[in-house]
Image 1 (cartoon, helix red, strand yellow):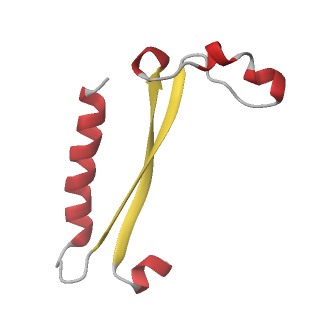
Image 2 (cartoon, one colour; image 1 turned 180 degrees about the horizontal axis):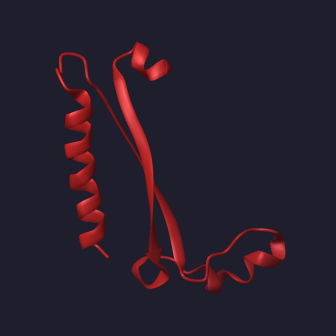
Length: 79
């Protein structure tokens, strides 16, 4: 709600990435589960945050949705 006071609209979304598509592999670093951390054997969870200032834009939700669809499509194409 604070963002809306400054004409900012935004959201976060996440995806999973198989370890073979990342630059790292936690299995090489030992066993993080033993240290009390979580580990996903299938891959990494990647979070994206996107926001923009919508001052002067007549339909910011529509603009946001268009940009979000583009970003999500790029993520899917990247595997």
